Image 1 (cartoon, rainbow, N blue to C red):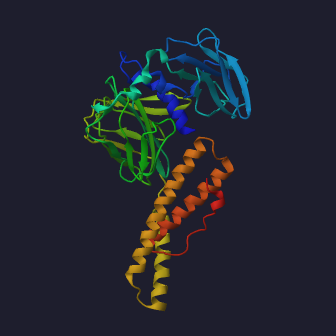
Image 2 (cartoon, rainbow, N blue to C red; image 1 turned 30 degrees about the horizontal axis):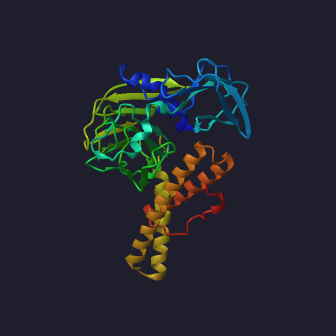
Image 3 (cartoon, rainbow, N blue to C red; image 1 turned 30 degrees about the vertical axis):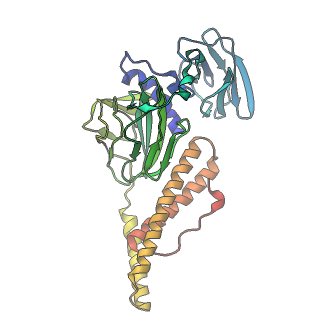
Length: 404
């Protein structure tokens, strides 16, 4: 749910970060719940349009799925359908079917205070956008448009990094860029994945993200998420993209006294949404292949020195006892065991990222989430202790029945 709140805030940020002459594409805002205070507590307003914000769809049925219940309301003259008296915390999803096209919002919880506004956008078939499907692709360039964002959410043990990339092809037909659209997430990133709502041409393997061409005329949305382990007060991120970035924009959730700095960012300010504070920063264009750097300082973290010292001492005692009782051991088994532990550590980080994603999307309940997260963190602590202290003892059992 933290990502949903960040995306809702992103809709507000667009008005600040994008030049007034630029018109945001409604499709990029479609289906994202935006918390507001101008609606009654527990109310949801769904606006239905066709193509552009000026093209409302009045007197049209909209469904709101409230858990297993389905409520229906018709849009008014402004294209809005309103639902009130919703039970706080219940999972909601707005749905409308326009000319055979099914439009759905993100799943989100009913608010206890304030309301939610969201937008559903039907395709404007009168413009014949689908004809380019049969048009052969030509060589051409794409850029990462000005509505793209980098969202960063710090935590005590890791930092969540999300790229919301709006890849723009300004040609009238599909194009294949001269360089493949492939990039690697920052060093140390684990559990890289493509988020829902992204183009089906996007894929991720390990730290590498690939978007296959050709790129259709207009916009291609690619949303990527990663987890970067961080037990220190500072984190330095370095990134480059295969296409030019029209405007660098970064949103950081303000946790404690965290700060953001970068030679490529020229403007930043703090903004509040849904009771949480964010650092919103923008910079100029970034050329294709040119790296940009972001530094986070004053990150929340817990010192692990004492724990690692204790684990290292325990490991040393165990190793001395083994050596005294059995004599010297060959280094090869230790090297193999260390390699296995590193592989196991990376898999656990991937499991942790997947668990967080499923928890945010409501696919796993609080009890299973808490139990599984505790299990993964315990296993990671054991592995780090073993890697630092050469303690190759048995790992805690992985209760696969709790797996998300």
